[in-house]
Image (cartoon, rainbow, N blue to C red; front, side, top):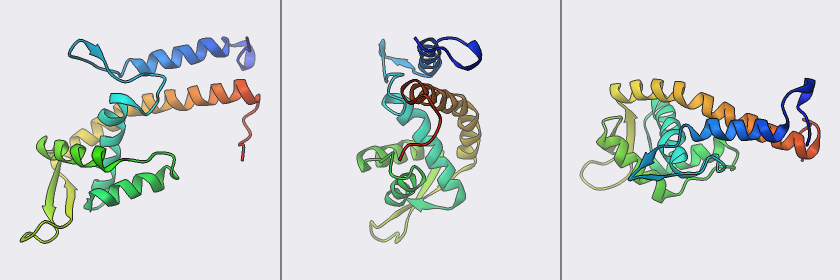
Length: 159
């Protein structure tokens, strides 16, 4: 078992600790656990925290529509995270129902693009999520770095 730099704890122990820290953000509903801490952007954590944070971040910059949000998330993550419209549009409707975003039709007399903008309640939620999600993202980064270091033995980027 490999030791961390400077005689620290074994890599496997550090990864397990990071996974436990990530699991703290996984909620229980209906008596069942949702999401897996080993799936960094899967399950409820992805839907419940990271995606709403990204949506609020993007609509705070300028009003935009669902397909553009999908494109922006893919651009930000260089294609590593793709969002299905079947995920985005229910999320936008839910966030609108919670008063976090406000949707307006591009052409009100017919259904065209629906542009979403952030509300004052959305700004408060954005601030809250920003603080809450950062430790989780740090845990994901640490876990992936530890796994990469264990396998490749260095921190040089691989092409």
